Image (cartoon, rainbow, N blue to C red; front, side, top):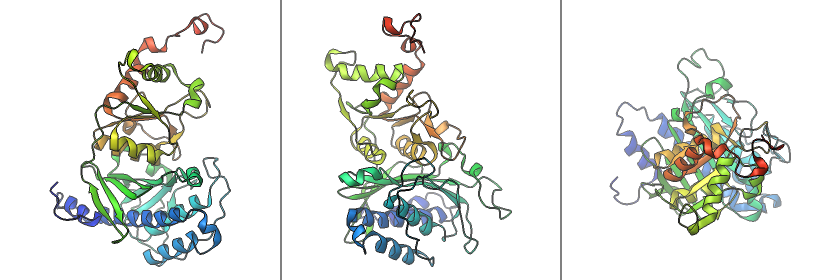
Length: 381
């Protein structure tokens, strides 16, 4: 894409729309509202604990929402409660969720929303028109890292309403959101770090926009992001090593063996524990991220959520030339079974992810590697 001057997010979306003369512009308007929510959250995150002193994050949230739509200011939420995931909500989780909902419920482009922080889909109030899209989001990914000043972010994916859904004026249901990731029409994330960036795909590659604090606008800074094909970094939580399945252990062991091992080169290990930060690093310089299925909790086939974490990040990775997988199959082909479904997630440089998939399908990998775990062992799975 030729660049003349500094392209804002608005101009980028207009140029993309010109490729589809039949497009109504509703998707563009929806993305701009999502971006506005991300700007507001970026200001709140920048306040850190200052919001506890009064006049900080709460004031920013109320003013941002009030400017976006004729909706009442959000009720204050103390945090500290458990969300549907069984995780303790932080105050900023609650505020970020409220911003996403309020800034997108009024615009007439959505039939409903799904959030990590809400047990059921958020309905569009009867006072507002309803649209043909669905928005799934994690309003503040990695919020536990705020106290240590590590980059956090927001993740979102946009789907079309199923054909005929909502025509009778009914509220959206969980089933409306249960679409594979390949059905997304747009996805992306905002990362709140030394700079605030919005990384976006509308199905035609991936572009990165940096928030210019002087303009108050997202400006195109990374016009065609591509995941490097080869890399020598991997990210995994090694404290779970005792719960890993054999294919994952094989891959990690080979990386750790370095130049003298079967891979013939040294690898570095990274672990930030912030999905957005991990994804951004891999987009910028390659590598592979693994939060695989393991045996730590048999009731959970993975840790990350499919609809509003794995699918949007997976769509971005695939559009940037990388690969996103469960470890066994492409994550974007998985048919969701529930709104908050968890799943194993592996993504990054295509060659590395494909290697991990091969190991999962290799019968030899599933065989015990030591006599202790041989077929006759008492510890056989």
